[in-house]
Length: 482
Ligand SMILES: Cc1cc2nc3c(=O)[nH]c(=O)nc-3n(C[C@H](O)[C@H](O)[C@H](O)COP(=O)(O)OP(=O)(O)OC[C@H]3O[C@@H](n4cnc5c(N)ncnc54)[C@H](O)[C@@H]3O)c2cc1C
Ligand SMILES: NC(=O)c1ccc[n+]([C@@H]2O[C@H](COP(=O)([O-])OP(=O)(O)OC[C@H]3O[C@@H](n4cnc5c(N)ncnc54)[C@H](O)[C@@H]3O)[C@@H](O)[C@H]2O)c1
Image (cartoon, rainbow, N blue to C red; front, side, top):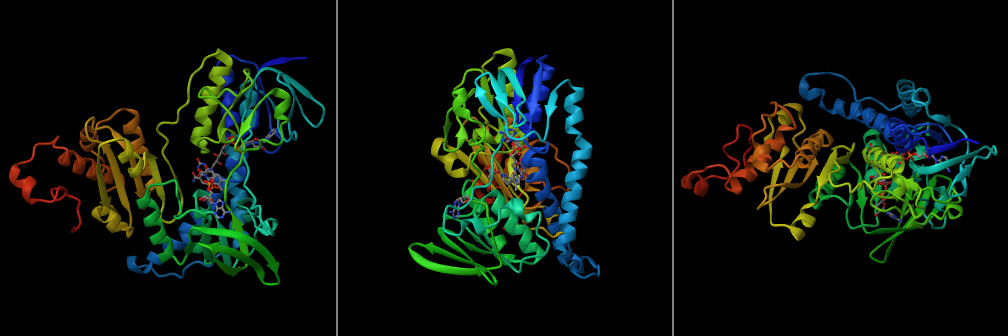
């Protein structure tokens, strides 16, 4: 029997990338995927959600027709056709990527739609067909799944995966969980015309983000008609003739809500139950495979990458972990993957994004200078009619290194990538301030914030008179009244 240098389990972004990187390094590689190639990213997460976000955006854009001298009614949403577009786009991405032939032409042996692989021991896995694969090393890229609510009636709630088969727009929807997935679903279905209530355990939505992000998103969502209930513990779900009856408590007070549909987006545990991990001596913690900083599991020849490690749970991080795990597996190295600079965000209306430390975390550990620039300062935001939003830049006072940035507003996810590049390159704030960013753009707001902090830190010359009399931002070409 062939003994592969590397056997990769999972054909999502992490598995595909790990297999290709291992082949680049000359290893013999087999990849086993239980279902369709592409993973959650292509089939059930980023791509289908992004199609819905685009449709929601087209609906919302109609709100501006009149202001720009255009006539036309707000589109009505034919959800069956929207979902057909979702499937069409998933198909197009598969056609574009051709993952199986890409891997095979790189020399990877692929078994897709092969059913769950299970460990026999630390050197072999078996497929439901009985086919066995032996490996010197393994890279586990088996992802995660939506958590069901462990409450009476929890099985009646939909997860995001069930949305793709909806054919009619729910009149009303409760979304349980107000982080990346829940906020996207709430924002999209509110734009489509559903009446959405968003509930979260935490005392604010997007609780992992900077406080300003939560506040701005809460304000915007409320303006879009989304009811937000925080510190809410959902306790029961009942199915009745008209839909769902939801029982929840806020600070001990029992409340109820009747909606047509409940969607749960309350966490993303790893797929740890399917692999017979014990047979290989692989330990788990909090529902994910435990790895050290080199992505090695508790079995010395077995690595893990992507959502299954429970670290960043983003496509870019899955790819990065996969490359590092493949290098460590093939070259016997101990390269680390600390996830220091990870720009990320979500395609809500408005978008939000961040990189690095929140202001609270930064102030805990550093002396900081912070600039908070409103979108209303940007000429482009005024012209486009997207004047709501902010950009926050956080800088270490002494070293003038960038510690983090947080954005809510148009193209937030794109803006934050520039800051990530600056952080990775060790760019000081005054160097960022001098970058000749194109005008009129949303990214220009990075320059406004960087120059504000440069002035505050005294790294650009200012007369005593100016310093004493003028607000620090007022010498900018792009500005709005204070
Ligand atoms: C609604 C939603 C929207 C998202 N949007 C974004 C976004 O915009 N940007 C972003 O960066 N991230 C986004 N994410 C997160 C992103 O999808 C994941 O971080 C990414 O897919 C992780 O890649 P992965 O390869 O680790 O896992 P997955 O993509 O989950 O792939 C794991 C693969 O392993 C297979 N598998 C599992 N068990 C076995 C087994 N025993 N044997 C064989 N195969 C097995 C699965 O079938 C699956 O194909 C989103 C997630 C969701 C849910
Ligand atoms: N655009 C993107 O990049 C994107 C989109 C979706 C998901 N993702 C990633 O996928 C992963 C999973 O995201 P997610 O949003 O599904 O889960 P999450 O674990 O990030 O957030 C779950 C939310 O549900 C809340 N919650 C948990 N139990 C609850 C309960 N019983 N009642 C009410 N609220 C409850 C939590 O307080 C939390 O806010 C994350 O790592 C995320 O970054 C990324």
